[in-house]
Image (cartoon, rainbow, N blue to C red; front, side, top):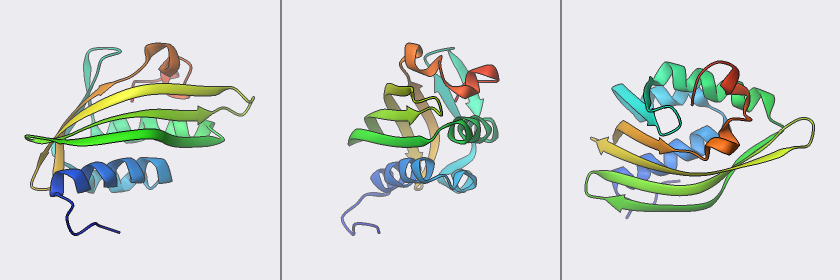
Length: 134
């Protein structure tokens, strides 16, 4: 449900993280603008949205739990910033806590660029590291 007072930028942030948490990852093609990219501090590389979706699918498929906690989202001049803890529970019982921060640029209600800062000690243990970065 959309809050009538919610800006398009904040709505894009809410929709992005709700979608990732709930697993309807193909919807990310509509949340991100055509040509959008995600940059990661862990490898200083840009990732396109199809690769991001594949990586998230790999992580989610290997996890028994996948959720965001301690979400703090604020509007910026051209988008939003979000701090959170991503909690990923692995089948063997290990729980990963990735304390992250994402800075997003939003144009016409769609994310055009994301800078994703992850805890490299946490993300190094996730399933996608056998392939690429999220």
